[in-house]
Amino acid sequence: MALNNRSYVGVQVTLASNAATYRLLDLINAVIAAETLWDGSAECPGAAREISIQNDPSSGGSVYIGDALLVAGASQPGRCSYVLGVGGSRQYGTGDNRNVDLGQIYVSPLVNSSKLNVEVLVS
Image (cartoon, rainbow, N blue to C red; front, side):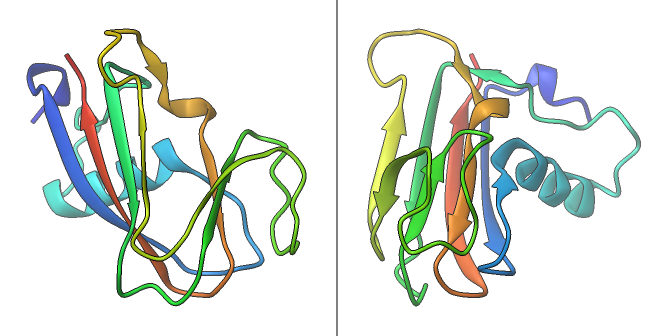
């Protein structure tokens, strides 16, 4: 099942440790691999038209969003571009039809086992 033929991907990812920084694209592809018994062809592309990220209302704390230099476990991490409070959401690329580089978005939770709901509009 190649995702190149799909225009939408919606997943929930779990951020296991507050002492880690995660690349969002890797998390999305790990969920896809688990759900499709990955055969090497099912991956979310790195470029998307729109991305929506929501800190699940059941999460116990905020999640930092930034680039590859985001520091995990810090109360005020470097290179943080946005803080998602519990239940908060953020959209990238909405309305401007630009490609958003999903591979450059990193996340770091304040508490263990935080969940993010992620929707990707590929084309």
